[in-house]
Length: 517
Image (cartoon, rainbow, N blue to C red):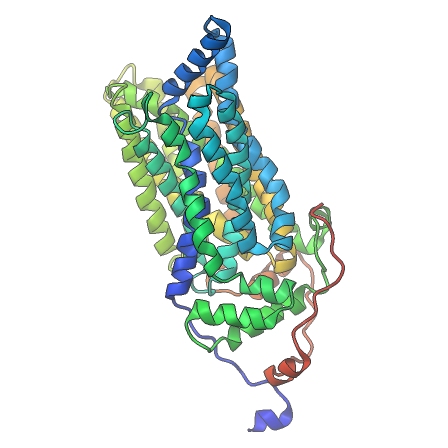
């Protein structure tokens, strides 16, 4: 009673969020439709690559009455593989414009078109006798992956209560890994990785997108997007009630209003302005280090070298595909474990432990490759190193950056940050895929020492710079980084009560709007 008479807003206790049915179904619909097909397209062309090359050669022979030479085949296959990360880079550059103009959910729905159309084209390319359709479709699928890799973590991070944000944030990587695993299963020669089944194998990438297109419209848009960027408090309230399963949402609304007040001084940040802004300096550098470390720490090189290591251990070439599937099981299990532990142990511990395991595995693997000719038994240790590396990467460096990059930016700077983040992710992905074969040919096993060094440097940066974000609101995390950036955040003015806000109406978004650049 005294509080009301003095005009002080009543203290609203925070209520622990739980995984309600609507939140669970929204997560499954969006993650399966976006992250799953991204993972599926990473792996679908790897195992049955000989089948695809045969199709390329036969098609070329029908056109020119001669088979293509090795250089042309290498060029076409390199284009087939490398166009995917190149398309991803393009998608990451346009995602900022989409998430602002169409919303998080709207972006994911529009993005389904970039999965369904190429799926149809690849499904009919054998009948049309046009391998060019595969190469073109891989570009479009890369654009789709580039958009979903940024829009999906943003959507899930803004839907989740703070005590579940880590677990839901890792769902992006969980479903990517599941997509990779099922692509490996379907690519087995006994299933669809054969001359008769490969068109269906490629066309299946459109199924998750179609299911998302049919289901996601029935689930809510991000409440933070509705309130902070669109000024629609009524819609945000309705979304929160559905996602939380109860009407006690005032504490979360207060948190969103606090975030809106904290970022009004910054305005809507473009990429160039974000890069020049001192209060965002260490956040921006942190996501660059996390994304570059994720790709440059050797995960793609391990996958590239895996078949050679399996063969040296006595695994028949025809059976190595089954060992690869076993590695996929390890990948899934450790990523799910990470999703469970991320809210218990925190982000930093998982990242540091993951990079420690990866760096150690790279060093041991270097010794194995150098000395396995003298000591043949070491080849079995090589397989253990590959599995250990995959386990380490799956528990920290792969899933956790998707959580951290959402948490360390406020709403106004998040879309620009995700554009930078996505560009770094796809560019380093492309660089590793393009340069690693040449590096491996030049220095052989010593290339893994480079990856071990990158793991060490990334771990040192995480230990020194990146704070623990578990259980903190976006505003609290912003205040921690303000100290790291050595800038002051002005104290907030006295907050108006909830009743007063309802009389005044929702905050009006700033009319000024910059382009993504």
